[in-house]
Amino acid sequence: MDKIKGTGVAMVTPFSENFDIDFEALKRLTEHLVSNGVNYLVVMGTTGENPTITDFEQSRILETVKEVNENRIPVVFGIGGNNTNAIVNRMEQFDYDGVSAILSASPYYNKPNQAGIINHYTRLADTSKVPIILYNVPGRTGSMMQLDTILKLAEHENIVAVKEASGNIDHCMSLIKNKPEDFLVLSGDDSYTLPFMSVGMSGVISVVANAYPKDFSQMVRYALDGNFENARYLHYKLLPMMNAIFEDGNPGGIKVALNELNICDTAIREPLYPIRTEVAAKIKRLAADL
Image (tube, rainbow, N blue to C red; front, side):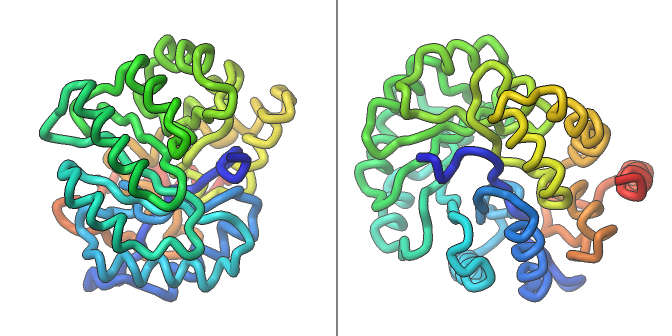
């Protein structure tokens, strides 16, 4: 799956002041990303506020992104949840045209055991017409996908990668060491991307790259080429912003940075709430220097 090596971007969903989807801003964002060197787009991940967006809205968002992208780079779509049968039913009805892979987070709230997680993803992978990317994000789901669970799922021919947002370096290194050769491990944490790539990750699904796709994707390319001196320069250039945009919640922070670039408004749908004034001021100060 070379299509998902390098830099994928977990796209925000722009809203107008009345919280309707701002499709013109979405077009600007898509072109901003595609024309500045990212390797693929991820539509309707958590950064896209998918829990508050209807299936109809999600379809329109995907169609808009595909229209602007014009098949220049791959598109990954997020389909997940904690009702396995409902996800399978949605996948059976889903139009996969123009979609290269599905990103799906481990079930949240119900907190299935590891056998339940394996069963869940196996059913999704058996149903989907395109490859599945696992998403291990215990900070959001309340449960950790254990090493043996991911390695078992990696044996499935339609499961090709995992987005790792556990933040556990020992877990990630063990996974990289023991995974099948053609199974990719991708960083789910912007600030950990370079350190994790130094031990064998194949790229990232990034948030900060919404605003700074050129520098961030160049950092990842340097790392893939083994040029860690140049990669470190860009890593430390972007690191303060990487940290600041998550200080008071995602995607509130990155939308402030995007607003400074005149790409989209800062609006986010409830229950998310605008970030604190002092954090927004910090992001604006950092943006002025980038």
